[in-house]
Image 1 (cartoon, helix red, strand yellow):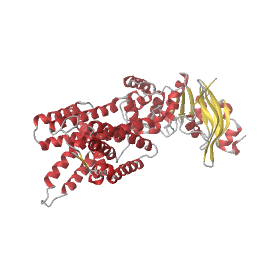
Image 2 (image 1 turned 135 degrees about the horizontal axis):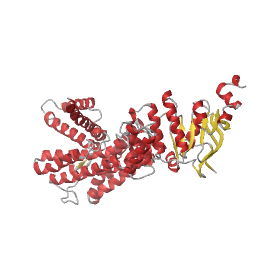
Image 3 (image 1 turned 90 degrees about the horizontal axis):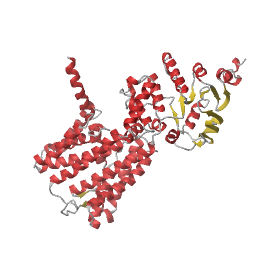
Image 4 (image 1 turned 30 degrees about the vertical axis):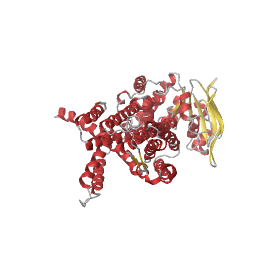
Length: 240
Length: 324
């Protein structure tokens, strides 16, 4: 039984088809990587799953319940959380207040939410930054903050958009380890990632998109050697 | 200024005012400070906490003032009923404006609020048969608490003080409650708030509607206190700007800020007008120049507003002392 199901999703912007009949299922506990060159439709797909865009055709459902057509906040309350590729911390709030906003989706008690937020900050390695304003954090720290904030909403499925994008090389292993730990803890993850080394190291399964269509879906070593995937990334000359 | 003690001091001083001071001019100043403070605080609910800057809040103030005045003159009803009717009407219009805020963001929302207050101004000043048009409405004086016909300024201080404290508590709620945190998130980044399960649309609309209703309550009391409702005053952009200015100068999105801002503006304006505004001094209008200059100085040196500015001074002092 799949937890998250994407079926026949098509999204057009004017004459451009950003997603064309994309379908795949995610089982509980899976960590799936979504890859594809720029403009392949990864971000659009994320926006559709999280409720920010509505598809022209097809639907997304969580545990049999239809998500398509619901507002993003509703989708989150049903159990799908996300991070943003272009980070969006609440810059004028403290780090702990940022995470509390997520926690308050699951509890009405402000004190309880604050305790929960501290716990999560500890888990992502930002315990000392709790009282700092979010605007003072580095990019790597902001990624961790977004992660903590999304986790605070107690998601059943977590969508991560470019966890290591724009982060300096030294911070990457820590972030990758964090994602691995979350997965080991039983969380279902859908990860968009540019860095192929990162994605092949963490994902159990990879879905590859190219020009809005799904071109491959399977184990990392199979997908990365797939003729169409190599062609999409590197061009025909590299296909063996 | 994190705690509530400055507010306790502020409201205690205001409560002591009528005990210590008998001078009608000073009591009038106190009443206006509290009333404008409460109105700026009502503005702050939308403009500060929800981040929806409005320059049309005079619309709600005027709705309150007109409701109290018209129900009193036309049907002989109590201004308290007028106050309620005004608040209900303002809530309805607040909902409309709230939904607009989801289509119109930033400057476009500000323009819509200005247009909205101007439409009400035109209705109030042209609908002669009902509102008495541009002549305005003298509010009949009927002695008694139920009819709010009160000459004792000390009673008025008590009434507006209750309103002011209530508004302060509303802001404190927005500072510390679950809904307050969520609203802060919406103000900072609406999409990010949505992604975390915050019902941004509903919260924004509710905040704007509540802000509108509270502003109308101020309007109704003001009409009753001053005794005359002039459409060109109560629906003016000047008045809307005054509400926003008091909140911004005092510290936007802080609970005590609007009250300090109102105290500053009202005092400055009253003083300058009395000092330089007299006919025959040859300096009529110079108070506006001084007033404007003072505002520019304020914005230059305390751009975040008075409350954060004072807060910073207070925090710095002990550190400097222990460091030497």
